[in-house]
Amino acid sequence: MTEHDYVRQLAATLELAAEFRIPCPGHPLGPFADLRVEKRLDGHGDGWAIALDGDAWTGTHWEHRGVLTRSEIYRYTRDQALTEAQRIAPLETERHHALIRSIQPRHKVPTSRDTYPKEPER
Image (tube, rainbow, N blue to C red; front, side):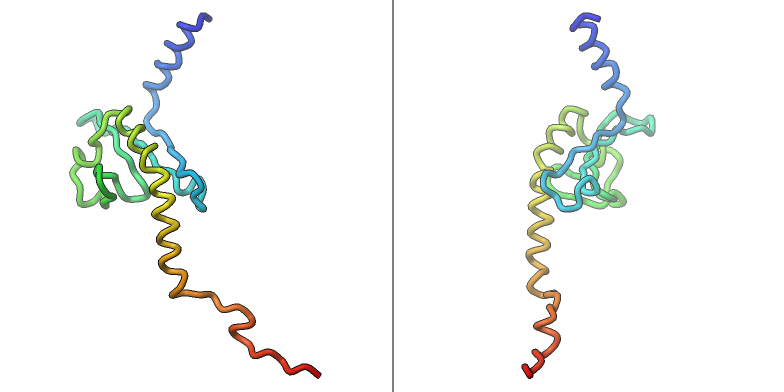
């Protein structure tokens, strides 16, 4: 197989893909935090969406899919969605870390020193 044939085969295989997973680098949830780039498969369009759990990326923020139209969810071409997902993946990691930092001071887990008085020495 020539290099040209191999590239053509890869391009044909790429056309079969209906979902890509974009990792959020350094995210403590690992693959559970991956962004999904999803192809619209309902037969009413050929757009692509960026998804995370039940939310879709609108281009500026996450919004629950239930409040968006299908055309708002599947707003990208495949290449645009992959580029945008790669751009926002590190931002998602930082957003998660910022959320954890914001709740840690209010919900400090007591240590044994905080909970139990020190026993007197004998």
